[in-house]
Length: 140
Image (cartoon, rainbow, N blue to C red; front, side, top):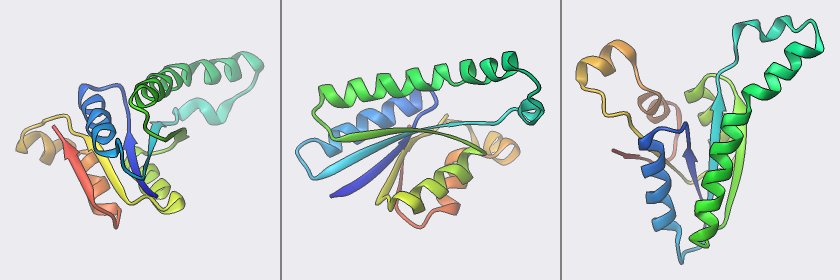
């Protein structure tokens, strides 16, 4: 069974990538892995009380909802899937996930920045292409 990875961040591009992956996976022997990466906050290492720990837990709620929405969409399309949430720098975390789970292809959205924006700001998609050793399909 092939494994596709679709990183989701709530953007329109990631939603289009999920739809594209779902359409490609239907009827085939493909499992779609949906991954949401949370960027750690600088102050999380300074947890001093239960209230701060509760804030950390609440911070993951939007990501959990993104994954629940993705799972619902894939279930409706009868596509086998798994959902995961990880913390770290997005591109590096995606690359580690690809290696650990033996992903066959990454399908991800782009934000549609122009050449100057990519040059100045960089792009998670661009970094993933550089870091992984599997095909990466970018969906606009």
